[in-house]
Length: 276
Image (cartoon, rainbow, N blue to C red; front, side, top):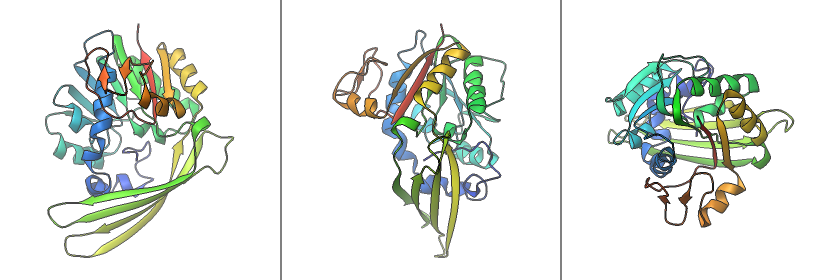
């Protein structure tokens, strides 16, 4: 589930409930996907060492990348950045909006993980992609990992959670559906059950609006910003589990990248922008 919101005041998950995030969505659940993303980074025309993570949330992807990469983490939620600082004290953290932030420097790679789900109109998505381009050096790569793409979206249920040594436990249930397939967003309804160390329990329910853009829109906006666009999503991602990924050169059967990167689990959707 997504770890950042474009409007943190709207959702409690990214404000007063942020401290529960490592239990709601434990960091270890991101390890396999982070390994795959590291392999994608290795396909860039330049050696990737410095990475900008836009919409970094609680830092659960960063924790698996920081051993090999120098990361700068940007998020709009100060509460989520505080969670990430506890997990990733060696990383630089910046409070900022992925649509408009400008750091005055470039990076070898830019990562926009599932925080991009909270972008729900094309104008804002264009801003996010332009931000990535502005921070990506020539020969670098920008990687976007949305949970949903319109053509392959399916309503469904999910859940998860975990606990900590202090005795706290958290779980969530999720129902995602599309009120209007003609627009660019879907609705996710969450129920969080949060048990404190003293045994007290609170139940929080809230609905989030999440982007679900068409594949063609992604490719058009990436090209319009100046990137060479690539896409793999929906059924393509499933097919890649039995053969070589034509976009990254990784053999999904062995998990080895053609340029020597680590293997891992391919995200459900992946859009790549390469800067010439």
